[in-house]
Length: 413
Image 1 (cartoon, rainbow, N blue to C red):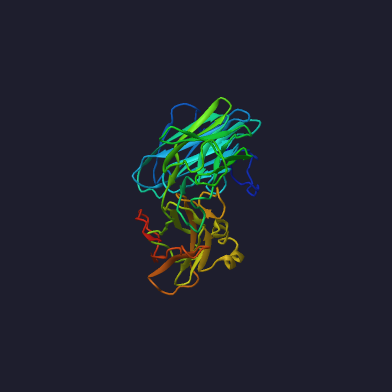
Image 2 (cartoon, one colour; image 1 turned 120 degrees about the vertical axis):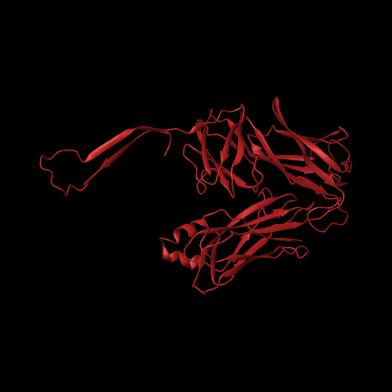
């Protein structure tokens, strides 16, 4: 339902089965108009504040964009814990399942950048609080302009001598700049603590959302604004220019001398689950490459004991209640890829994080067990990094009406 004035019509005896003596038309009552209003979010002004609670997890906003205007949304949470989500749709109210754009990174802060429709129009926003046990305050801000920069991937490069995978001291690094509103005239430069401006050896405009750069940090012989091999270790600010406007990302890129990847995983489960089928309950895989180097995207596997039924497809988890044929799509084991930011398909860059829902639908049959187990394991394409294994215990009981802590089973390698 979009904002507007609505009327409610209540009618009794809709099939006219009851005889009224005088055939009076008194079996219908109308209420209205009842206004439905969505809070307006102004661009380029002070951020709006709100508070999410377990009883009020969803809050909605609307923002108007001019034709072709770009938009950057920043959601910043202020609670001690919890996870916030941000969803955006054009000319329709978004949901967690259906949205044109979604920010669902682990944690409370989310950012979305988008280029508006050529005709302009209204974008509706949903701020949703997940895993919150109390009041969760937040700020929501919006900026409009002709272009925005959302990030650089990878944001680290390791000049390891003799590194066998992804980077080496004499191998140029490929960097992806993400945002909206780019064109062929958009340029990028880097500035380190020495004050020297360094430009990419090669730059390519792929789309209004993507630029790719080649940086010869070692002695690759590609030429450039400074001699090869003169990118000393440290942080570099990145400035992206388009026409007279520019954006600077502080400490956007780091060069280090030594390091490797480090995959960290967490399996987050509810304090109690219902064994009844089909009751949709959500487990979460959280993962992060906390190392200094990229690695192949891992394939993660979750296995449930005691005949527990799992799926990674939320449409199946919802539809199996009314469509018994979908039960064939459930299994005690599911496998999912951990794609990270997705800026470099198949590669989990240093600093990449992600959060993947797995849906638990109860037991295939009642075994009488008071608890079960779910295990997280996996593999990657290169034998140097085996995905960690972790295990969590599920208490098979009715879901508690009171909030319960979310246990975590963790692993790292």
